[in-house]
Structure formats: structure tokens, C-alpha cells
Image 1: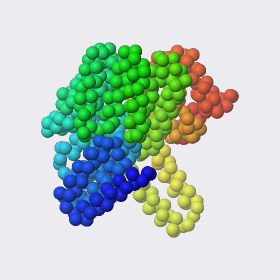
Image 2: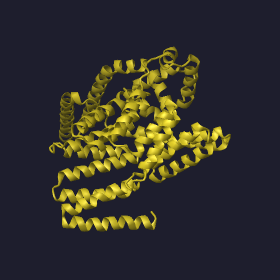
Image 3: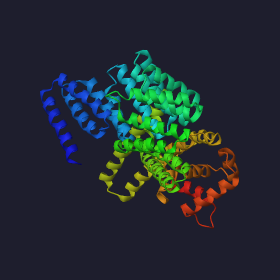
Image 4: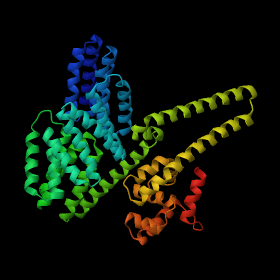
Length: 475
């Protein structure tokens, strides 16, 4: 940490401690306004430090609503840093503390941030459900800034799903609700990449420049604007100008430590350098893009270590009551087994009895797991046959041990390779896989051959038999 940054944080802590010591809500509220300034400048870590102190101050004077807003702010900031695990942790705290507040504004923000986290994890349906709830409340309360934020977030999911009609509709709604540099830039991207209307694209880019003059403009919006100016000039054939804008965009994203934005811009830069016949630079940028892509995939895998039951509960709020009952039963069962185990250990002090208790617990867990797998198998098969983008995500929820075991063998396995493993594990042959994934049989066979090498499958054992034996070992 450099001296300037250290002094800045010291100033925040020193000043905030004075305010908190006086326990004045007015002073806390005044200091809270500084959070938006820090976030706009991209000083996310400093904002988190200050916000934690603010939460402590609000909680000390029993200002529940203000403290909940603080937790939501931290969750949003961690999401900006692509730390989804920490973002979810603070959102869970905010959700628990807001249960008795009956405040639509807070529910809008909580649902919006949950949607953003689940989007990062690839749970698009779950994310869309949260956005729908948040948008409904925002419309009801006529909160235009929230609508701009939520429509913008939802449009990104539609873009990933290649649902460009709904993507464009949401971008227009966001822009009409509260025009910003971000919405203008995204609309320009639509006209550049999809509609090929360069006049409309330039109109929105210039509008974005106008909005960027605001002192409170979050600096990341400028990176988005520069990236889309890069797209614009790339499409116009002015490659040098395109590269200039793209480099400025990357510089901002690196300062903000936003790997997703860096990755997206690196890919466009690689294309620009290729068109300029600068193949070395094109290769370097594409390699950087691939490295970040793989790194983010690994981080996403780590997030799946969160309890699967929690993800399922959040994914289907309509069945929350039945799920809650199930969790209570499972918890009581586990507690009972623990009590029996301790009682038996103290009374008999027998290794045989201890092993028996542990075995009983293991069998119960296996039975519950097998029941869950049986209920979910048909759904997963249907997702596989329809080549659904949610297939691999759903497979991970039901068979987390399979993915973990494969990554133990080769931690560098890509998502595409793990998806192929999922098809093979479910019993699909090469012909079926080729049919459902719209690839040739030879392509599938070549990929299976590469998998054999990476997974060290013995030559005398078929790939299908190896995966079958893997399932027997795990379940």
C-alpha cells in the first residue's frame, strides 16, 4: 500500500471514529454520503473500510434501516470487485436484518443485488426472478434510478441468452427511466454489433460523452464508453483510433480491478491488432483474454463450494416452506445422530460402536443424496437434450462430487470439457452428444480422446466404463 493510500484510509478511520464516538445519526448520514464519492472514483476497498465503520456506528444507535443499507452497499461493492462469495455473505445479513422493516426500497436493492450475484454464478433463471421482484417494487414506488439500474442488469442476461429483442427493450427502458453514460454506451453497442446502424451508434456514444461530464459519474462507466468507442471505430475501419480507446478502457478497468471488463476489452483488442496485421500483439491480447477467462471460471468453481441446499432454497422461493421443513428434519436427524454418537462413545468407549454410528450417518446421507439425484436426473437429461445453457449449472448442483473429483485429477479442465464429462457421466454416447450439441461425431470423439489423456484413463478401460466406475466410487 503506498503512502498516499495509507494516509487516505487513516483519515477516513480517524474522522469516522470521531463521528461514531458521538453517536449522532446526522454525522453518520453526512459521512455516508462520502461512500458514493468513493465508489464513483473506483476506490472500492476504501469504501468498504468506511462502510464497515458506518455500520458499526448505526448499529450502536439502533438505526436498523441505515445499517441494512450499509450491508447492501458492501455487497454491491464486492460484486463490483467480482467477489461474489463475499457479496452473498453480506446480502444474507442484510436480508435477515430486513425481515421486520417492511421497506420496499431495501427489498428493491436486496433483490437487485441477489440477481446480480446469481447472474455472476450462471443461475440466469434465478437471477431473472430476483430482477422481476425488484423491478415490480421499483415501478410501484416510481424509483427511476433503481429502474435504470435493474433494467440495465437484466439486459445483460438477455444478451448472454442471445435474446436481443428483450435486451434492446430493457436498454431502452433503462435509458428512458434515467439516461446515463452506461445505458447510452450499451445502446451504442447494440447498434454497432447487431443493428449495424452506425449513425445511431454515434448518437448514443456522443450522448454518453455528454452524461460523462457529471462529477458523480462512476468511473467504470467511462471504461464502458471507451470500449464501445473502440467497437465503433473498429467497425468503421479506423483501427488505430479503436486501439487508443480500447487501451484507455483497459487502463480504467485495471485500476478498478474489474477482470470481466478487462477480459472483454482484451478480446476486442486482439481482433483490432489482427486486422492491423500485428499478429504478435493480437496473440498476446487473446492469451490475456483466455487467462482471465480461465481464472474467472476457477473462481466460479470455488463459489460452488457454498452449500448446495442453500442455492436450491434460494432458487425456488415458491417452495420455500417445504424446503424449510426438509432442512429442519435433516438438522434434527443430524443432531440426534450426534447425541447418540456421544452417548455411545462415553458409555461403551468402543471403536466398534463408534464405527457403527459413523457408518449409519454415512448411509443416511447416501440415501438422501440418492433420492435427490433420482428426482433430479430426468430434469438434467431434458436440459442436456435441449442443449440448455443451464444444463452444466444444474448438473453441478446435483453431482457436485463428480465435478470436484474431476478437478482434483486435472484442475485446468475447462467448462466446455467438464460439460462433455457431464454428458458422458449421464450415459450419452458420441452420436447422442453430437446430435444434442450440434457438433459432428468426429469432433465429439476427438474431444473424448483428449479427455482420456487429461484424466489419465487406462488404455484397457473405455471412457464410459471409467465414468461409470467413478460414479460407483462417489455414490
